[in-house]
Image (tube, rainbow, N blue to C red):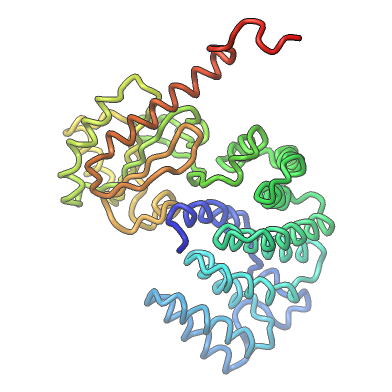
Length: 366
């Protein structure tokens, strides 16, 4: 069975995949304009409408099936059908289905840039499936698709990142390092993904670890917090809301943790799912929640979505390397686990500060 941690590792890249515009939308359909946007075939239109209804009722499997059926009824030219089916497959971690959809999408591409995007998309979902299934053959296939994308469009930083990640999973570290370097050379925006790629360049082994999803937020007091900028510190992410009774009951425990580990390489980040900003701010002030606070808005917020939070309270611990260690829901032993992670962080930071500590002078000399 696939672990929740592996699922979050997949989510991190799939979020990047969708938000970088790697999907062909209606405007990317064939240039002749005969088949654009939603389907034009009457049968396909009915099937498409039914798929939309399934989607509204949160039946992703039925919606994906009907979107793909509508595309087939429309002669395989419905970019919107494929886009919506693909997005649903990614969001539900159904990577086998996403791979099939990505294959269906390739014939729609016309210009080299569109073809590059189509092959990138296929490479990305093959990589996600490889992470899910732990199969090297899938990573090898994804490498081939990323390389094809780069042959069609050399200025494609996302393809370099994808290729580097797949190569890292294949333990081809030197080649992976070259791709991460190429990504950083082409992708200049200061984003969580660039910060993550920089860490992969420094330590390729992290590219195959179960890393916490990359993100950055601006907290209530104006601090800019990025998960990768917190490297060297243990992070506890606490999802909660003022309207959540169990969250309010758990608050004294979170306050105790924040006090107990104050001054240690440790950060608590509380992520509120409150929609009412004023109510959230009043509650935080009244209960003296002095650690970093961020409001995500609801379960559909970007951070809650990244962590696949569907119930609260929910807390996640992340070690000093950024590796996702555990999810805690009502875990009474969380302090003991955090204490061990913090001790490891202190030891790691000491090694960085004093790299030769504990060695015998002259050891290793000839």
